Length: 305
Image (cartoon, rainbow, N blue to C red; front, side, top):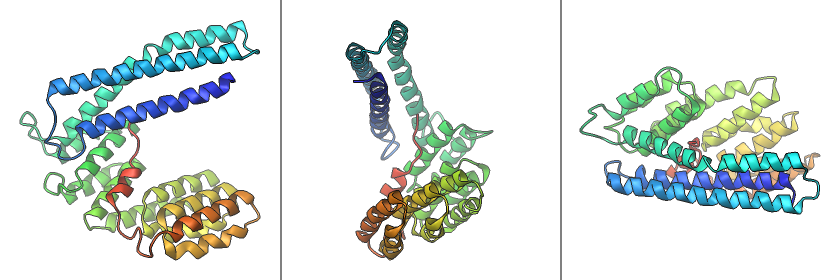
């Protein structure tokens, strides 16, 4: 076992643990009816369990690192010292990680729950929370709250969502707002969002075109499929690959032939992916993704650290 492989395993395991714990906390306190929350003691007990679980997983990771050292013949004294220092430092990470989870869940609960102590509407709280130049973390939290309030037209009316959309620059937050409004039956903002992203596809920098295709893929909307198709023939291989992935996430059975045409692409990575995409689209109806589902929107929510 090499230390580099162990490092990769460590990163993946930490990401999986953090994601699982945070998803547990979010689903436990935020999802569903915001008014149905457990009492404070129950929340405190759950946080302690999360912190304990993180500590246990970190101990397991430290054990993996030490085993890697024993199995590596190329490890020198400096490497050992560095890894031991890292292991000692990691022992304090679970508490900080748990505190971060606690803080984020608290903010989510505060923004998405009506309270006698805070008479502000959801929109008023969100606007204040997003004032100035909000960080990606704040945009992700706001996106989650807005998603959870999709069906609450009174607490978070359409005009308030439109106002927040116009005042923000974060692409993921704007997309989620547009998707929520689309679920409410108003597709105008989602169509506008797709056109805004489409304008970035004209960039001469391949990376810019890739980023735009990734954003289009997250819309999970059939309206974006036609925008994606021209870039299946982009001169840059990576752009073509991202265009195929975007088509897989926005298209339906109507685009099967378009994907199949790339199965003869001279670039093996493109032809192989085109085969997979064509197969995936074949399983969808001609009306798939013409209306957004709740699961599609949730799947593309920006991650909360």
